[in-house]
Length: 204
Image 1 (tube, one colour):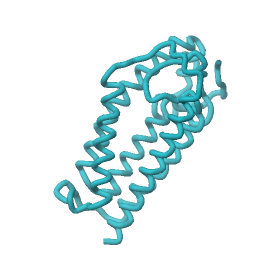
Image 2 (cartoon, rainbow, N blue to C red):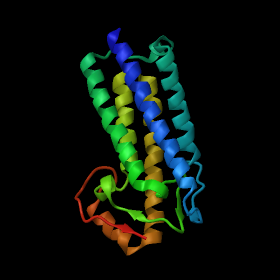
Image 3 (cartoon, rainbow, N blue to C red):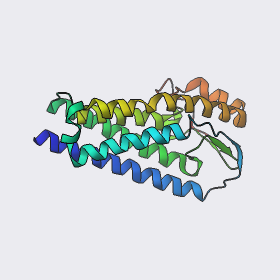
């Protein structure tokens, strides 16, 4: 029983932090130079992520309010597993906040390039091209281990292929905008995990 209460507290705390930071990033991005030079309106990369995220959030809310409603999709867990989930979730939350902070006004919830956009290679972006998506993976892993619920896990994992597709599209856009600077950045950075760390730069 204590483990169940702990998992609910951890889950809703992480969810609220990431939600608040995302809304703050969206608000900051609205005040940026938003002259769009190129945009993707692919349903899979925009609305697919939003729909699966909304379904996952709904499942989290249901679990948080009344875990018994999702008892049919639960599996046995333990305090040690919950601790591992809390660790992954905490790391994911911290990485998401750090990534949003480094992106600043360069962040957008759609795949696009703007007139005033800069190539960000500081902070977690120094070694990883998509640390924000890495943080989502850690959060999903934490979700699965904390809740011990395969439905929540399945909904969360369904987001990852869409984020992978979006990452590839973002890279094509950034290469088209920043050219050789971006290609040099790709050589020493990993897509989702660190490969090697090069110099820090932010190209206008």
